[in-house]
Length: 74
Image (cartoon, rainbow, N blue to C red; front, side):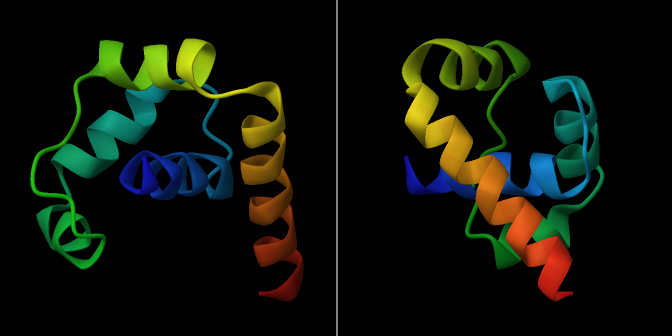
């Protein structure tokens, strides 16, 4: 779950609207995956299901708010 949190935070930081962009970025960035402790990049259906079905509304809002705060501070 922590890994998915980090992945979706990355998605929000880049303002990507779909999991496809996140998946493409991760696939082409093995050094980033290593820094994020991601051994295996989840497939697109896993990412979609996690965001839309497994994550609560409150958790999604928390990730979105965290991304906004990081961008403001940066």
